[in-house]
Image (cartoon, rainbow, N blue to C red; front, side, top):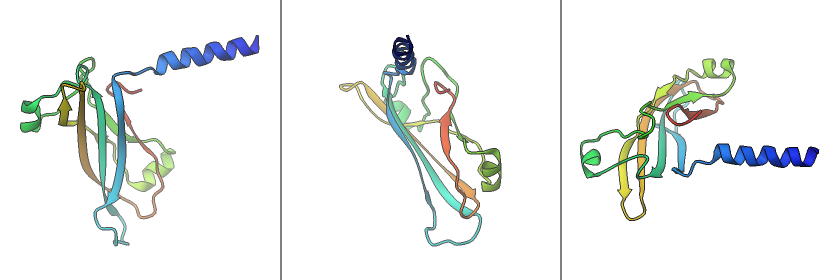
Length: 139
């Protein structure tokens, strides 16, 4: 009984997490001055994602006009949030970021589009936090 319940749970989990429109992405950061030892430290956060072209439509006009692009099934802009403890987030000085993606490239042959968002934040020196992209099509 336990084994069949476990298999059922895994199958449901796989079905829920199936997102064939999402092709992958990264969320990275680096200091603007790698030698700065003063607090707060200015960092650049880079978010990059790739999607199916039908879900996140992009074209040369959107790229040339620096237009943002969103999920065709959900127009809500994603945010970058701190997911560490409330105390760690507060002491780091991290501020929630609205992160509209700017279309950077697409392929009609591969049916894929990619977008990027850059922003700066000032964080307390030696902060240890985890951040994540949430909202839009994300939980």
